[in-house]
Amino acid sequence: MPPRLRFFLNLVGGLLAVAGIVFVGIRLQAYLGDARLSDVNSLAWIVIAASIVIYGLGNALLALAYRRFLRVCQAPIGAGSALRLYGISQLAKYVPGNILHLAGRQALGAKAGVGQKALAKATAMEIACLALVAASFAPFACQAIFPESSAFIWISLWAFALVVIFLIFRSNWGAYSSRIVLYHAAFFWISGSIFAALIFALQSEMPTNRSTLLCGSFVLAWLAGFLTPGAPAGLGVRELVLLVLIGPHVPEATLLLAILLGRIVTISGDFLAFVLVLPIRWSDKVISNSNIQRGAA
Image 1: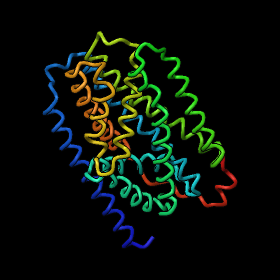
Image 2: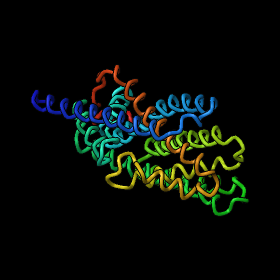
Image 3: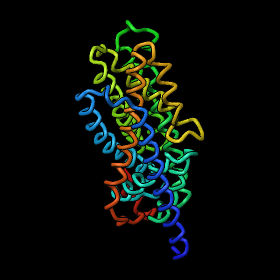
Image 4: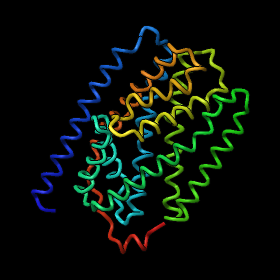
């Protein structure tokens, strides 16, 4: 790679990472100012601390899924480089516009020796997979309409939808790519479960059979924010959807506080992931196409 191009890519990637850090700080300051911290009990603080760590480590699922997309696009990289690529660029999603993390991924990926077309194609596949898997959680939100129904029904519908998505990816891009569906599903279960845990910690008398409703509603709210252009990390959109879906089932004060704390958890978790991947070096080289053909799973 020409020295000038490498310098430019380093500059772009560095600026986007710095911008992400700045906006993360701004968001955290705003949320901490709005949250009624005096209403947060000791159990909730334990849940918050654990959730930050779990969410931060859960980002690895997204990074490793993206690595598989790159392999499908004939431009695989090592696990370490994938974690660094994803962890550093992810912070830029908090910058207004909600697309700069994608630009950062392109710049950092090019620095690692990955072709721009492969990066763009992998990102497009990732967006489609995330949207489809998140949409599979829609049955859980139906519990808001049928509160007396069995959770088994909605879990069965979710599992059926996930199997369909799994088979679509398998038939088009092979078994190696279909496993990505499971990675994304696991990440959404982690994210939704964290939100449900916050609700339960703040509202101890909340019925436990509402856990799938809380989890599914959070994932659908995430999807709405994900698909809304211009909203950094779905800001505002996610909160509105949660109020509509869960508002009738959770006291408004508890729900609003849980939403604020949930944002603190996700932002802090993303920052933790950023810190954890910084020591990782770009030591992995892109594998040649011939090696891909011999070693494809």
